[in-house]
Length: 403
Image (cartoon, rainbow, N blue to C red; front, side, top):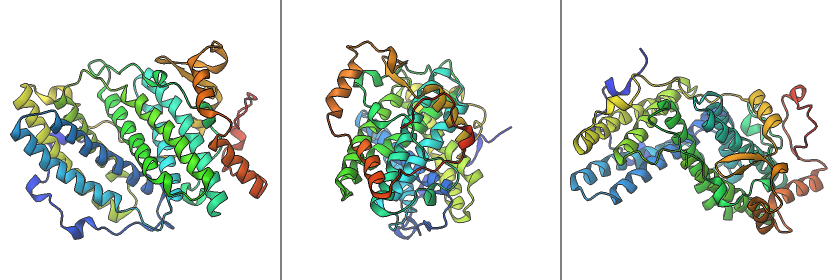
């Protein structure tokens, strides 16, 4: 029998309050941190932000004073956990260096979830988004080299390739085409719901990050690149949030959030190679087990439902950060020329001349597209674009252009 957070004893919530010294943790060293330790930190920051924001939304939609007080306590701890996780990121990482980390998270997290999610429709949505974040990594890596003289390989290691994906210029679509069919929580595996929420929280954090730091870039093409890719991240959030089952009650969603935090902290506690950060994941797991208990009690009181009936008997197979080079190459070969249409996907060549995608492309791209200019700029400065290829022998023989 695997780990079941419902059967474990957590840390009583009144003992979870941190001192300011607890929150002001020592950052990791950017020069020797493992790329996937950085990735876990970035993702869990987004997970904690999503948890806190969800509990704020729940409070705004309830007039039950006892419930509002209870979730205010849980939310305060979520906020403290977020500070601990986020404060692990050092100030010496530039905005662009941190951005490379964000995009490595997006690429390898999405690829892992796509490879392992049980629902084939959700898998297709994940695969589609994967090729877009993969291209973002390529564009930002060229900006990093062009403006700071640094190489993305010093951040991503030999785990993630940096080559073109679905060109960012092709990713801009009409908002109607971002909305997908939801995954039925009553028919699919619970793991699918956990995966959707995980990817949604990660993409939301990336969207928020670019919204706030894009104006910190001095280079005009770089500022434009953050504006352009920031819009794609908004599209991704719209796409992934539409996969969640809208029929779920507030208390079902509360439990989903808390269970997912238990799942991810357990997953990362098992894999973490940094002993100091591993202890943080372990401590936060103990806190989240208690938050899950509180959420389950709220469902029993307010809905008269047994939460054990909706949850697995043990946590699913742990989420893993691992290299996905071969898988991404396969998706590139098969899906590079897809675009979204209604709730599905279509080859761009199959669109009708009056398709709203083509009209939207004309509206936003105009005669100056930052994601194209950054590549042109780096080629002009260094004589070539920046790429990090580790599977040249596996390159597509289909003849499709990736630039």
